[in-house]
Amino acid sequence: MAPHRLPLPDWLRRLETLSPSEINLGLERVAEVLGRMALEPPARIILVGGTNGKGSSVEMLRALLSGDNVVGTYTSPHVIRYNERIAVNGLPATDEDIVIAFERVEAARNDVPLTYFEFGTLAALAVFDAATVDTAILEVGLGGRLDAVNVVDPDASLITNVSLDHCEWLGDNVEKIGFEKAGIMRPGRPAVFAGPDMPASVASHAELLGAELLRAGRDYTWTTEVNARWSWRGERVELSGLRVPALPGPIQLQNAAGALALVEALGLDRLLEPTHVNRAFGSLRLPGRMQVIEDGQRWLLDVAHNPAAAAALAAGLQQGKAPATVAIVGILDDKDVEGIIEPLAACVENWIAVTASSPRAIDAAELARRVANATGKACLIADSPDMAIERARAMAKTGDGVLVTGSFFTVGPFLERLSARD
Image 1 (cartoon, helix red, strand yellow):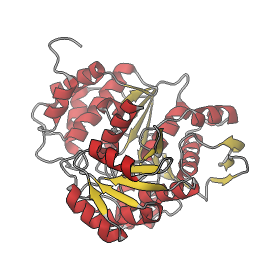
Image 2 (cartoon, one colour):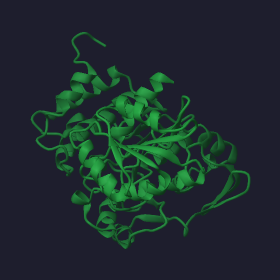
Image 3 (cartoon, one colour):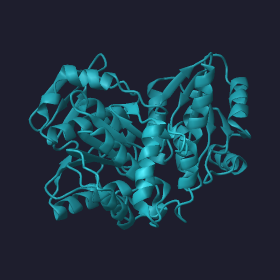
C-alpha cells in the first residue's frame, strides 16, 4: 500500500465517526454520493434480502454464476476481517483495494454524513467498478426498502424468508417486516421468495409494482431423495440426483432451491446443468454457519442471532444427533434473548455467557441471568473468549460438542482463536 494512504484499520475506525447514528435508514444521502462517484454499473445486479440465510444464498448464487463471469459479492457483517464483506470471484478484496475505494467515496462525499454500512456499500460498488465485474450480488443489511444497497436498480431480487428481527426498525409483525423486505423488488423484474410462509404484504407489494414474483412451492419445488441426493423443478428446467450443498443444515436445501429459481428467472438455463450445479454447491464454504472445528473437542460455531435462526440451528443439531453439551452465547441488546435460547435448550446441558464484541452487546452477567431464567439451568459467566474456551473444555467430556452462537460478534473472536489453535 502506498505510504501516504491511511491503513484500513484506521479507515474503519474513522468510518464509525462520520454519522451521529449507527443506523440511519434512507436512500437520499447514499444516492447523492453514488451519483457524484459516476461509477459504471455492472451488467447484472442481484439483491438478496430476508431475515436469515442471506449469506448462504449469496454464496450459492456466486458459485452458480462464476466461471466466465466475473462476480462481485457484498455481504455483512464480517466474521473475522472486514475484507470478507467485499469479494470478487470469491476472493476477499485486499486492504489496498478497499482503501482506494474508501478514498473514492470520501472524495465524493463532501459533508454528507454516511453510516459505517452506507460508506462500505458505496466502497463495495467502487471495488466492483475497478474490477469491472459482470455481476454484482449485494446482501441487504437491514430490511430492504430503505437499506443502502437498494440504491442500485437490480435485475432480480431474492427474499430468503421473513421472520421477526430488528423489530424496532422494521415493525413488530411479519406483515410490516415483509413490506420492508419487499422493497427490493422492481417492476417487470423477477423476484423469488424462497421461504415456506410468505407474508401477504410481499404478494401485494409485488402486484402493486408489477414485479414477477416466483414463490417456493408454487413456481418451483424441491424434494429430498435417498443417499443424500435431492431434486429440483422450476418452470422450464428439472434436475434430479443432485448432491446436497456442502453448507451444513437442513435449511440449505431451501436456500439452494431459491438460488436455482433465481438463476432460471434470469434466463440462465445453461447454468442449470447437474454437473455444474453439483460442482458449484459442492465447493461452498461460509465461516460461522454450522462450522465445525475439531481440536480434541468438537466446536460448532453458528451466527444464529434471532429465533428463526436458532430454531434452524437446533434442527441441525438434532438431525446430526450430536447435541452440544456446552453452549457459549453472546447476544446483542436488540435481540430476543429468550427466543434464541429456548429452541436450543433441549440440545444444551451447560451454558456460558460472554459479552459479544460490540458496543451493543448485552453484558455477560445480565445475559447469564436471562439464560438461567429461560432454561432453568445455571449459566456461568466468562470475562473473555479465552476464559470461555477453557471453561467449556473443563465442562465438556471428551468428544462432546461445544456450541458457540448468538451473534456474528460472538462467533468471530472464537473462530479466530480456535483456528489459530487448530
